[in-house]
Image (cartoon, rainbow, N blue to C red; front, side):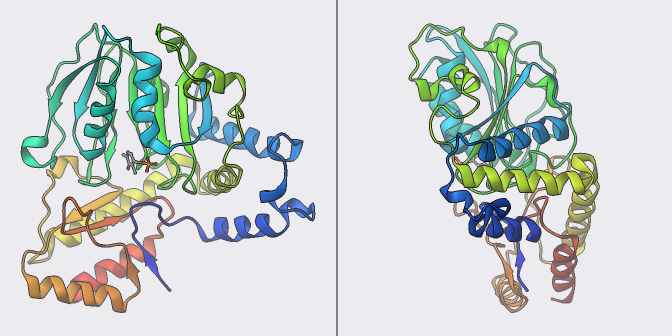
Length: 350
Ligand SMILES: *Cc1c(COP(=O)(O)O)cnc(C)c1O
C-alpha cells in the first residue's frame, strides 16, 4: 500500500477512483463511457447540475454566487480576474505571501495598477504578514488562503469593505469559513476537489461588467455564467471526478466533518515534528498550514535515513518544492488519518 503525500495532483478517495473508472467503462449503465457522450446531453447536464448544487450546499453559498467549472487552472485566473475586474487606471490590492500569490501579482500588472499591501518575501514567505491596511478605494483585494509551496495558511478572513478575491487552490473545502464574504473564489481542482484539468470559480455577479476593455468570450465570466460553464466543450471527465469527490465529502459530514479529521492529522504531525530532534520547522507557528507541512532535516545522514525509510514504507511525495527544498507533506482531504499515523511512527523510530 502507498501513502500518497503528493502536493498536486494528489490523492483522491479510493471510492472516487473506483467510480470514476466505472464511469469510463459504462457510465450509469448506459453502455457508454462518460468520455463519449455529448456535453449537452441530459446525462452530462445532470453531472454538471449536481456538481454545482453540491458545491453550493457544502460551502453554504447564497444565491448571489455563481459556480463555474472552467479550463486553464488557477494560473489562468491570475490574469482572467484583473481582465474582468480592473481598468487600466484603477488599482487592485494584493497580499504577497507566497510564490503563487506573487505570480498573480505579476499578471495583474498587465491590466492595471497593483498595490502590494504587505509581503513576507523578506523571510522566504515563512509567515503571513499581519497588521496591514487594505486601501478602501482599491477595486478588490486578492490573497492566497493557503500557500502550498511554503506551508503557511491564513485562517482569518481580512476585514475590508472592498470585494475579496481568494486563490483557495490548496485548502478549499478543507475547513469551514464564511465563503459568502468573498466576491470571488477560485481553485485548481487537482488538490482538494478532483482531477487536473478543471478550475472551480465562484463569483458574485454584481462585481462583473464594470471594465471597459473588450473581453474574448472565453475570458468573460458573464458569458460563462450565461452558458452554464458550457461556452465550449467543458472538461467533462474532470468535472465528473469533482462530482464524485463532492459526494464523498458530503458523506464525510461535509466541510465541517472533514475539518475535524484534517485538524487531527495536522496536529499529530506537527506535534511529532516539534518533538523530534533533528527536524526543523521554518514556518511561523501561528501560520502553519494544515494542508502542506514543510520541514527541514539539516543533518544529511538523518535526511538520508528518513528518505530511505519513506521509500521502504511506500510513502510518496515527501520531497519539498524545488524552489524551497527540504520536505513537504500534503494532508489534503482524501489523505487518510492512517497515513499520518504511519508517517509519525516512522519519524519516531528514526
Ligand atoms: C497549485 C496552485 C496553483 C496553480 O494551479 P494550476 O491549476 O496548475 O494553474 C495556484 N495557486 C495555488 C495556491 C496552488 O496551490
